[in-house]
Image (cartoon, rainbow, N blue to C red):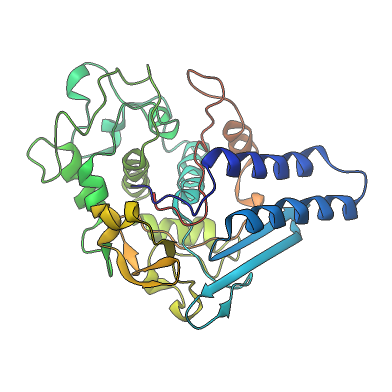
Length: 327
């Protein structure tokens, strides 16, 4: 499910933040010049699109180099959004999933080119190509031919998740499962022969981490990623964070959002130009992390930065997110 950002197109957002990335990686002659450039890009974006709130931090050489905030974390009570606010991060959470998988790969506990069924107690196959295995690498690079069907969109709900990761995933892939649909859960192309972004594939990766590590995905990330990085405000579930510090979530109060059944069921009320969303959940609901590259080993960092797949621009961290999107 995708809830569109306020007014900017995805291309506009990508171009803006690709520009920021290039400024950082290529470097400017002076730190002041770089900070001024970042401020200009960010200010232009908020002036044009007026989102409810936006927070950006740039990490350089292991510390926060620059940050920017705009708007409110709570529109009704005019609570300013600042860098201490906890926010849902949608598909940016896939970088955490990728890190967990590659940690296990680096330790020799799983193989990227192995059939995922080797790690599961049920079978995952595209029924159109039952003889073709789906590998861990396929899942990481969105080339597994797994589709996000209507069952995926319908599984968002207000309040805490009532379905475990293993229960939801097994019901999506097993023929007798509650969410199984031969036509809708898979693409017509063979695994490894096409590309289509897949949230469900990353849920399956989370389950593989559970099976290989013999602990819940949440506990694995807490012990092996969040704690080493001192990411004390990060969690997969709302019950594990200070909800008083959590930003409210908004989408544009548009006819499109109101009539979208997957979005409309998450709407609490309208406040000005926006709909305030409930505290929704899903089997892989994630709350904001911070960033530190030291969690990646040398082999892992190199692997994550190596182009993969058909298009040669598909990386293991093949995901992005824009403000106020659910994915």
